[in-house]
Image 1: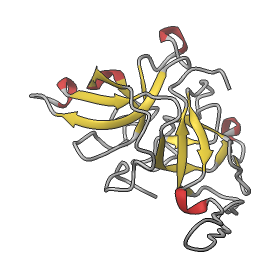
Image 2: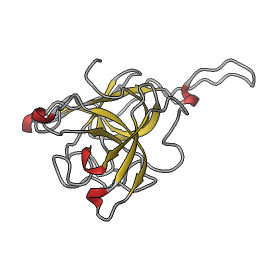
Image 3: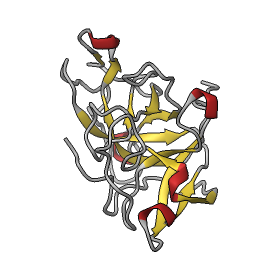
Length: 199
């Protein structure tokens, strides 16, 4: 299970669109202690998780949060004073770890997605069942029964599109995918929604 947020050079799989906003680090979650557990990774420049912005409770506006991918992070004197640049553009495509959990079932055995499809909704999930570096799952509710904000939808990588053009055909067998009937956290592309619950 990943214990560090998405990093490296492959996190951004589309160059546009970009709608970058600046927010205070304490207004982003799940990061550090701002989750159902206190085990999420901490932000650092060079890490690119998908996060929710704003309240974590229904009284504070959850699940109608703006969501997006962290582009840059500038640390303050303390972790709580950092400044985060987040791309909230609907339609941007980013590479992220996504957990295949569908339901937590309130203590009963969870259910898992074994055959994900393009366009399947992905949510910002602050549940501690997920790895420290994982902020996304396929579950519309977290383990506490709170509604998760919409992050986007599963989408193709550039190499997963059939191409009969110049240079010869590219036929990929990457979709549909097959996942185990247990918790797995797989790197896939997510087309960002920008947040809200309009899907």
